[in-house]
Image 1 (spheres, rainbow, N blue to C red):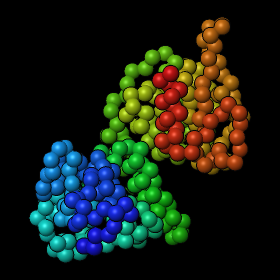
Image 2: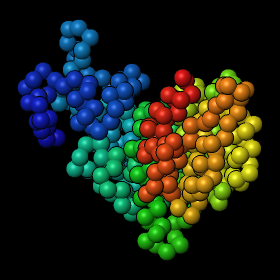
Image 3: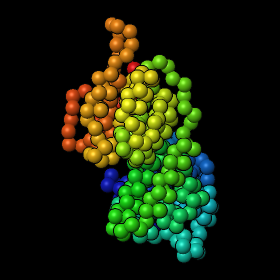
Image 4: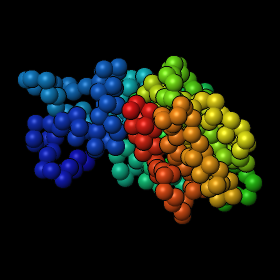
Length: 328
């Protein structure tokens, strides 16, 4: 393994080892992932320095790089850790599981016929399982990604790039691979539900209503937002796809939410008049009337801005806005 300078002058061969944060940057994973592998599988440094700060040597880093390569092929983390600790070469793995080399640690430029670009290595394993319609492996990889990276990071850095790669494959192949996209979406939806804690009880006016616009059936982005809010113990009412306009108005009137998030995948389903109507709704006693904060989510709302309607561009931004509205 060729160990290169990290840009800050540190080299594990000459500077007493790398910190956990430096190791994580080299591997392209979160520091919590490195600590989790140490705690669960014994992949920590061979030697310890005085104090609580651990230092990782060249050999420690090589072991973690093997762990990254092996998990990217679809191996369960426990099995990958066993092979990494034993120093077993990846050449002894079956051809279908042999990992490919990547020019950037933690990332992959291709995977299983999908154009993944400069995506995380985990994307390759998820993509391969989806293309093979391998339900058990796909579930395991998705749940592991959410557990190790957190819901928001797993969605942004692993799930979305893989979904986009599958979509490009579908578009470039006529009507082929539609089953792969449906299969992947279904298992992502299941992983989100299994990884989320129970929905917390709500206080009056402290809930968020999530709904797709009439005619809009792309529910997955709202499902991950539901899971992210539930993870933060924020009450949420999810109404799913293609909620009729009159039903949306009735749901808002009945629940009196602090916020309403409306998803539109395309401009044909993005109804600005309906969004404005929801934003203008009021409830409560005279002198203390309240209105919901309305978020317009999805690419369908692009290209236009209306005062009083918010349009966060990413999942983390939407979560932050809703958290600030509901908590206060």
